[in-house]
Image (cartoon, rainbow, N blue to C red; front, side, top):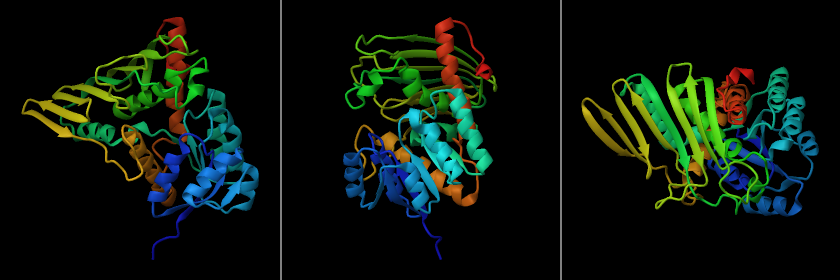
Length: 344
């Protein structure tokens, strides 16, 4: 007999939560049984759309009333720590939206709370789960291009991200914290942990408060040097949004993940080009389908880890290293000096 579905609840019915609910519904071994949001209109909208009748305005009341295998925290960053710590007190495993925390102290406190409670904690850091990124990782794992010595993870676009998420224009931090965090995590996923970082940032759009361009030079413990660059101020004839471009130089060859999801691997034996386009899920829409597909992939990973008692790839403990790179980038851009992520 198949095991009973994992019973989950979602806290936060905002901009991105609809993707998470679609992905949970696609997993036959997971059922979202309750929703929570302080906005009654949003709560009703998603509750009706996904047929979820148990609805709460208060997270503590929900956790007290429901028997849950996990809770999915899809709220803004300022509420993450109280909600994660609340779930930990109730001994409920937590998957938490990124950015995980506004400060390293908050992030460490959440990791500690869940560790002390003995419950798993995963950050919804989904870019590494995009199928084109996974295809690059597979080539590296096979050793086709030998040991890598240089890499680049790039996300450059002129897309108006502020129209759908106007709050992004209001913060003193923008692109490193919102987008660069994904690119930095992809660099860690492909090339390993980072021992040093140099950063430069710019604000090109005068209507926003934070930076919209960032360029970072990373030294990895593996010996690889990478460039991580991101921009929402780059006007291109063919905008690749929201694709991540990846380049790898190895001792035996090169990998190029280019616009249009073309993966080219060149070695002494010749070159191969493969279409690694992500599937268009029935509920997804272009051009967001690569991100939407990664939501399903990371949530499947979470369910598998819960059932098998494994630590997720993007656990809270692991995500501390990605958050440290974000802090190092801002510190390095301010000082214009190299920074050790260990200092954070």
